[in-house]
Length: 251
Ligand SMILES: [Zn+2]
Ligand SMILES: [Zn+2]
Image (cartoon, rainbow, N blue to C red):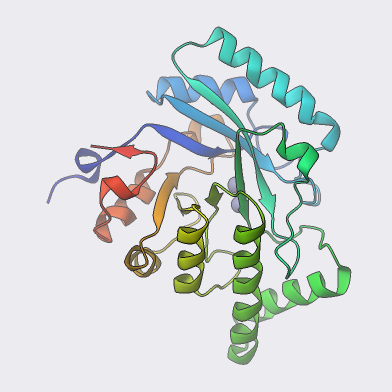
């Protein structure tokens, strides 16, 4: 069998965190320099949405980040730097924590489930989170939480112009088929996340059948992890996913 690196190459990493996320280590410039070293032509800086407790970007930094990225694009002609955020899905109605005002500053919008994001409506959000914490222990709760999570994701995809759904299936159980259908209808790519182990080969196969498109990303929280997508590529290859279906891959 051919080595997965010979089958496809990733030219962009659309999911990386900088120190504007409380849980990441490198500056935006360090991420960009690392991406150039790896031979990437594009990188997105996608820090956590503002409602992520302790890790979220501060709203007052949005304009500053935009400026920093514009300046990096001015001095670097060999790589395109995009400004994005990894929004948190915070309500059953699909609400995310990136408002219109912030959205206008962004080039790309990612969204996903995270624990420790401040729910929109406290009781509803607490229910979602408690269900997700308990679900591995109790199958009946697992089913219930899957229905709620799936509905939240589908509503978010309908409501907002989300480019990438991050690590579907990680942190919150979802109905992959239903989410994949909504992703196709709303032109959203499903992420194969190289750090989290999601989507799994099984999920990729289910979503493929629905006609979904995919993206393989590092979810780097340190500059040295930017462009590290080996594990994601391996899963894509195992699922027999063709390069044409992956928005940041080429032969
Ligand atoms: Zn995430
Ligand atoms: Zn992330």
